Every structure is written in C-alpha cells, then in structure tokens.
Length: 65
Image 1 (tube, helix red, strand yellow):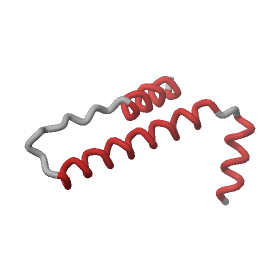
Image 2 (cartoon, helix red, strand yellow; image 1 turned 60 degrees about the vertical axis):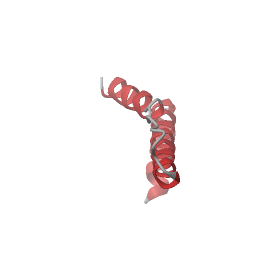
Image 3 (tube, helix red, strand yellow; image 1 turned 180 degrees about the vertical axis):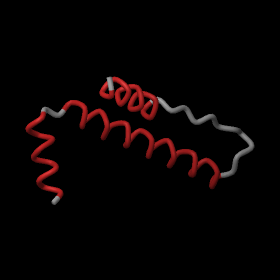
C-alpha cells in the first residue's frame, strides 16, 4: 500500500506541470524551470528506490552509516 502511494507521488512529481505566463520575465521562467527540474529529479529518485530489492535497500542503509 505504501509502495503504491510512493508510486503515485513519483508520477505526480515527474509530471508536475508548470504553467508559463508570457508576461513572466527571464528570472520567473528560470525559477519555474528549476522547480520543475527538482520535482522530476525527486520523482526519479523515488522510482529508483521503489525498484530496489530488499538487499539493495539494506546495502544502501549500511552505506549511509
């Protein structure tokens, strides 16, 4: 169940739409682009973690210590 919720979160993050307004300046557009990029990156990380098997998870947790 939690895995399914994480999958939904990953999908939302990766498909998070940023609506552009033609009145926006260069800085506003850069901020929106950066936000979208961060959301997609986090979504990719979540997808990668979901795909890991138990052994990979254990190894990652050991490596972090």
